Amino acid sequence: MIEIQGVAKSFDHIEVIKKFSLIIQRGEIHILLGASGSGKTTLLRMIGGVTAPDEGHIYLQGRNILSLDQRERTTRMAYITQEGGLFPHLNSQDNILLPARVRKWDERKILKKMNQLAQMVDMELAMLEKYPHELSGGQRQRVALMRGLILDPEIVLLDEPLSALDPIVRASLQKELHTIFKKLDKTVIMVTHDIQEAAFLGDRITLLNEGRVVQTSNFKELYHEPKDPFVHEFLRAQIPMDIHL
Image 1 (cartoon, rainbow, N blue to C red):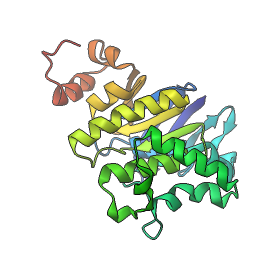
Image 2 (cartoon, rainbow, N blue to C red):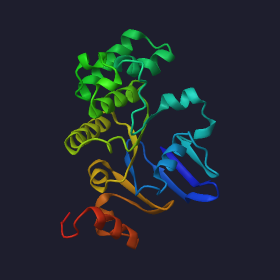
Image 3 (cartoon, rainbow, N blue to C red):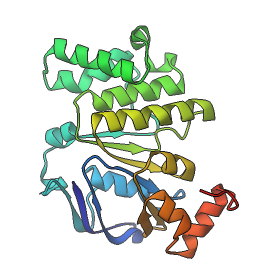
Image 4 (cartoon, one colour):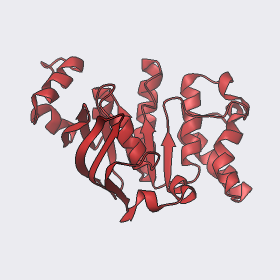
């Protein structure tokens, strides 16, 4: 369980995240939804311990995120960015295995794990010999996902991982992500600006606007029981409101 208590964050005297609290249950896929500049990436970075809050605390299973050393934090939580963060001088296999090799894990076991993950994300093993620049956008994101999962983390943090992909590849990866996370029983926190992606993937959605949490609920409640006029405005911008959901 992740517990966010009274968290706030400012940069250059501009309040990016306004004080709020939230509990994310184990095994939940939780979507941080909002337009660019709404504060969702800053919130994700605070959950990952990359950025410290100015106020409040974030707890992972009762322990303050900031009390975990970097090795433990990056073992228990995977952080996957939009670009994937792959090292260009390493081939895909070496990118995937790097976190486990740094920890001196058994090579046979991590190779077996990599092969299992390749099957899950529909990635041919021959493609893992290629370097990031030789892969398509969808393939790079599959490699980044495999690297994120190689340590079998409890929590997976994703910052708009599919936004740069074309619609067909994006739809395919959405389905794969949903299947993988449910099968592996991971707690997932994902940033997106796409309401349809949020509706498909999320157990619950937190909609942010200018650093303020507007509403936290499942999609059906967000659609049918908006708590703020902004919810209706945000949804209407992406979904024709005469569609019955």
